[in-house]
Each structure stands twice: as structure tokens, then as C-alpha cells.
Length: 408
Image (cartoon, rainbow, N blue to C red; front, side):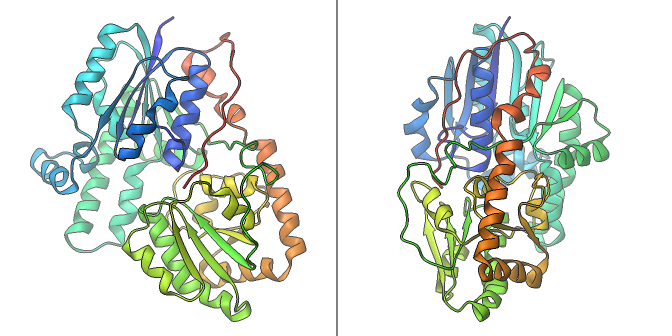
């Protein structure tokens, strides 16, 4: 029985943002069944210093710095008539690392995490190929292209068309194509007619994200509304901007002392500017998101564009906090009514105000949310679908699960 080669577009440690959380937990799950070698990009200098955190769950590791600028990648995309998503991640050092790893080790499965990394597959792979698209990126770019004008809009629409063709070709080569939700998997099947498409959903570490776990507590500030996420990511930027500028003022009419905290690393200039709005706080990176989530009267996920399962929603549910999510952010989560879904400015504001008005009901909703994720969203339960896909039948799991990091 051969090893697994895991290719990732971003080094999956520490698991402190959506893509890294999924990659880390899948890598950990695979490593408890077979030896896994890792080749990944790093785009944050801090990640190069902390990559040793993967030593217990990987065999050989090679982390390659990705420093190509957007202008260079964009020019290459136009000249080479390729998707920007591929030229941005095209790197000869990483290509050589893959070739060397495949030559030196007995590898029978290549697990590709994100479509950008599929360009490093052999032309005719002799190994089983499992392609984890996570989301259908071409659909995301198509959505962006509909609302963006000028040259940028043209580039986004071009990216959507070319990437859709690429995704279809990759799926045809893969033995299995994975998506983070059944809705995303069905969208891919419908648009590509691809076969062997599976949904493997995200889970949540309910021992780490536990309101009774030991972590530093924030001094209570009520009513406090909290959003957590990577704050240089376009859907998050657009979501918090819309909430702060359009929804939050309606909440402050009924609750003049309400505070809105935007918690997460790398807030761009547009997000930082929101701190000028009365009652809005932009924290930047914090060592642990749990104190903020635990202190929240309500956690919001006001995303207009969301693909797959939102980890931020699962984390808040696990922390027994009442959640108000947009319809887009709630899609893909089997919440069983344990979160509130707000539609539009009025719907979002009314849902938040109702929970602030009724703290007893809000607490009951939070407890129901935690029970929901305990019952339905453990990582082991969600990733069990990989056993058949990866050919793990009869392979024992000799190791306990490891806790994840919770910074943002």
C-alpha cells in the first residue's frame, strides 16, 4: 500500500482560516490511516516559521514561497491565454518538488486541495487522483463579474469562462471530485455533467469551540454583535461593509448602545474605514477568536456571496451563540432551524433586534445550535466519507484527533 501526496495552495497550519481549517483536518484524518507527504505554498512569512506544527501528521514536507504579484500573474494569464488562478500559482520550484516526490516515494494517491494545484498533476497520472475543489471557483468569479464594471469586470468574466473549462477537464481526469456541500456538488454536476462528484462537508472541533473551554474571557459589553473572518477576502469585506453601513444603523435605532466588532486578520482599507462609524470596532488579528464569540450577544454572517459551508457559522454555533446569517451564508449548513436567517437589510436588522430584545430566547437558540453541531458536525463524522473514496476500507485509525488553532 503506497503513500499519499497532499498538494495544497496554502500551507495548512495553523488552521486559523477557512481553507486552512479544512485542509488541516483532512490532512490529519488521512495521516491517521496512511503516510502523507505534503507539498504546499506559503504566502505569509509567519507560516514559514510555524510549518513545524505539521511534523506529527506528515512524512516529507516541502513548503514553497509564493511571492508572484497580481500584475505579473495577470499579464501572464493574458499572454498565455490561461486563467489567472493558474498563472498566479504557477511555480517551477513547486513543479520540480512534485516530480521529485513522485520519483522518490511509493505514492498511490494524490490528494489535490483547490483547483489551482491541479496543474501539478502528471500528464497521465498512474496514481489515484482525488480533487478537492472545495467550492466551484468559476461560479464565484461569474458572480463577481456580474457586479463589476470595466476591465476588472471583463477579467472576472474571462476567468469564470476559462476556469469553468479547466474545472471540467480536471474532473474528467480525477477519480473523485469533492465539494464542501451537496449544493455545491450539485451545481458542479449540473454545469459540467461530471461524474464521480461527492460532497464532503466541513466539521467543527466542539471540544475547542466550547463555551466552557478554558480561554481568556472578555469583559462583557452588551449588546455586542460580532463578525469573524479573514478581512482581506472580498465576500467578507463586502458583507461587513453592507452590514455596518446599511443594517447596523437600523439596529442602533432600537439599541443605541449596540456595538459591532469585526474580528479578523488583515482588514483592508475599506474595512478599517468602517471603524469611523459609531459603535463599530475593527480588531485586526487576534490570538484567539473564542473570547469575542463568547462575549457576543449575536454573531452575524451577513455575506451576499458565500460558497459551501461557512466555518464562522459552525464556530459560533459550537460556542452556543445565537447566529443571524444571510441566506447565502446559511446555504450548505444543516442547521435545523438553530440559526436565524435574515433576508435583506430589513430582515437582517429585524432578526438581530429580535434576539437582542429577547435574551432568554437568544440563549435557547444558542444552546440548540451547539447541540446541532455536536450531533451533526464532528470532523470524524463528516470525513468518514473519505474512507471509501480513498480506499481506506479495513484501515484502522490508531491516533486520537488533535485540537485546532483558533486565531483569526
